[in-house]
Amino acid sequence: MDWYPLLNSLRIAAISSIVVFFLGIGAAHWICRLPKTAKGLLDVVLTLPMVLPPTVVGYFLLLVLGPHQPVGKWVMEVYSLPLLMQWYSAIFSSVVVSFPLMYRTARGAFESFDHSLVQCGQTLGLPNWYLFWKIQLPACRSGILAGIVLAFARALGEYGATSMVAGYTPGRTATISTTVYQLWRIGESELAFRWVLVNLAISAVVLVAVNLLERKKTFAKREGA
Image (cartoon, rainbow, N blue to C red):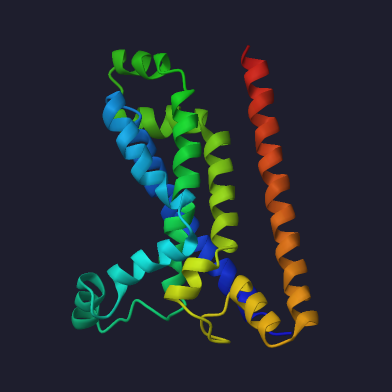
């Protein structure tokens, strides 16, 4: 059994989660401070990939990253680096589809944060970066960690957009999701089922992690009360 799809999927999901962590937290923290109208508009735009069909997301990525499109053409001319049909192409699709989960979870954590703690720190002359990284972020860590876990799981199971921008090449771009489909398509049902079991095991671990984080968050609220 070739384990490349698993290793590639974990690599893509890990990199995507790191990118989404910073993008999601930055967007959530910024939007929480905006007026209600602007907040609602940006919220719709940023969470749109969560409700769009994955193939639609893949289509838009092709319009941006294609070799004859502005971004893809520029990267190819300057760095001689193709953005499609490579293993790292799946990172783009995974980031787009998993970002809304991280953003919404982080935003909920920031909105439930007691901002009087920040105000007290400001009266003491503490800089904003210190208040964010040392006070606000640790206080919201349970919600943010849950967002990271959900984003990782979403990136790990992504298929639709990934199949459009990265394709399926054994030992090069194959992921668990694309491998399951290709094995089923050629009649290798037994091997496809093995990969399904692998995916189920990883998903179960992710769900257990999310439940533990939610319990920890609830317990912390009760202790605070």
